[in-house]
Every structure is written in structure tokens, then in C-alpha cells.
Image 1 (tube, rainbow, N blue to C red):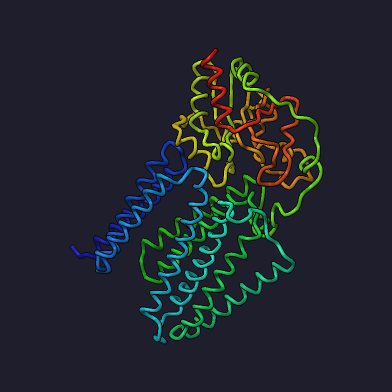
Image 2 (tube, rainbow, N blue to C red):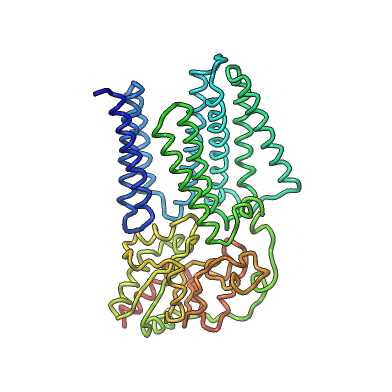
Length: 463
């Protein structure tokens, strides 16, 4: 059988595995299998690509071994709180890989060749520019998420004009290169520098509250860059894989924007969190909070027929997911109906809370989406909010002056009793006070979430 037929058939199988894997990632119950399927598809694609190109396998094997070791230890050692910044790094490396692939392909085949196809020149420029901006933008996102740099938006007068000038410069360089691709290495080098600057300028004005959307968008950028690189090297599976990543990233970005009631343009250009607002959503005194002790919370939970846990980034910081699961199991043995209400943008990346709870082996059927639990919230006896803030702030529904007004939230304020586990009264990503903390049906249980829940477990075991 012709080798090219076997290779193309392998690519078709790989593409099918990618699609089925993505489909399975949409559910916590099948996400691990989907990840495995996608990984098998990628391995098959790599093997087929190597066979088709006749590349020296020794260096490839060394690179795969080194990458495998790094990936293994990253998966085992990186804390759940650091997963968002690791995803940002992966996005950046994906963009850098596409940039380097396109550049070296040009240097090896088209530099000095005046007959380089115009289409190839166009997709080569796209791969380099999008890959470059994805790399630098992802590094800024990593810095903000890891708190290496401040998560606040960095804005200056005339920022939009500067961005327009950068885009115009990139377009001009692209046209000059496409007109003379054979002698265009100088233009490409400048374009790479412009792309890196544009990536920084695109992400630096975006605040921490919008980082989940930014991560999804950068993921899409990395896919688009890979797709363009696939056209450059005439590799069908890279085109398909890049298109799948790009499309799924755009879809996820749209979902995240809807979950925050924000347009993509608003996220990219508004500098969210740059100002402090007044009113019920701002930093003003809204009354007194009602603190509770571990014993108080124990008696409330012990008498409850239904309890809903609402996890947030504070849960990840405290690494309290295993204690939450243990408390949930104790409540179930006590005859309590237990659920976990998940907001789409809770945490610092899409699906952060799902992954966190899955790590603790929380049953998938107990994970309830926001739209499913909100209609029944008034029937819930106790809601336990653990480290969540903006995603449960009733100002999003009630205060038109709040910057989060209109954002869908988990409406915990309608439950019979709300217990909020928090270290202090500090605001969330949006930088605004939470009106929920001052409601008559809310009790504040201050302290480290892990220590607080461990104390509750001790109360139940000692009763």
C-alpha cells in the first residue's frame, strides 16, 4: 500500500480522536477519557508526520523524552492554584512553536526564492504575528495570575492609538513581505518584534477579573497560529488540530463572556477594575456582618436537610477540596442532600472548580451548574460559600452602578441561610465589596478555609 495513503488515513483517525476527545471534555464524567483520546490522537499524528518527512528520529525521541519528563513533573507537582498560570504558559509556548516553525520553514525553503507563493507568504505572516502576540500576551497573563506582576489593569492616555499604530505597522510589514517574500527576512524580524509588543499591549490593560476570558482567548490564538503554520508546511493534521483549538477557544471565550455579561470588546478595551466605584457595589460601609464560630456553623449544618457548597478561588488557595468532600460525606450520612454549585467563571480559568473537586473525587452527579441550581435556590436550607466572591455578589442583580451589574451569579442570597468562609472582608477580583456579607441571612465564618472546615469535621465527629 502507498505510504502516503497510510499517513493520510492516520491523520483522519487522529482528527476523529481530537473531535471525540473535545466532545468528552465537555463533561466532568468523561473529561479524563477525552483527554486520553486526544493524547493518543496527537501521538499518532506525530508518528505519521515523522514518517512522512523522514526526519532523524534520535533528536525527536530526545525532545519527546525531555518534554514528557517536564510534563509529568508539572502535572504531579504544580499546585491546583497554579494551574491557570500553567495553562497560560502552555498557550504561550504553543504560539512560540508556531512562530518558530513558520520562520524556519521560510528560512529553509523560501528565503532568496522570489517565486514563493503569495498564499504561503500570507499564512506565514499570520502564523508569525499571531504566534508572537500569543507568546508575549500569555507571559503577561502568567505574570498576573502568578502575581509576579500586579493583576490591576495598566492604562495610559492614548493607549488605543498606540495599539492602532502597532496594528498598522504590522499590516505594512506584512504587505512589504508579501510583495517580495524572497528577500523578506528583515521584515519578518521586525514583525516578530512588533507582534511581541502587541501581545504585551493587548493583555497589560486587562484586570484580574477578566483573566478567565483572556486565557480562553489566548488558547484560541495559539490554535489559529498553529492552523496557519499547518498551511505553511502543508500538513493537514496541523491545520485540523489548529482549527479545532482555535474554534473551541473562541466558543469558550464567548461562553465566558456571556457568563460575565460582558462583550469581548468590553473585556479587551475597558480596563476592567481600573476604577473604584461607589454605591452598594463599592468600598462603602453597608452595615455590620454577623460572624459565626465553628460551633455555630455546626449546629446550622447539623439541622439542615439540604446543603449546597459554592467553591471559589479561595478554596483552591487553601487547598481545602479534600476536607470539603469529607464534610459533604459526613452531611450525607446525617441524611442531608449535598450539592456543589459551580459558576462558569469561578476561579482563575474555565473549569477550575470542576477540576479542583474532581481531584478530591467529589461525585460528578453532585456538581450542579449555575442555571440548574438558581431556580431551586429558595428551597436550599444552607449554602456554604468557600472563597467565592464576585460570582455570588447580589450587586450584579441589584446595583446598576456596580461594574459587575448584569453578570449572572449563583443567587445564594435567596437561600434560607448562607455561611461564607473567608479570611477577611477583602474584595474579589472585581475590587468591589460584596453586599451578600451584610444580608440578614448571612453568617461570616472567618479564617483559613482548610482549618475552618477541619474544625467543622471535628465538631461532627465529636458530637
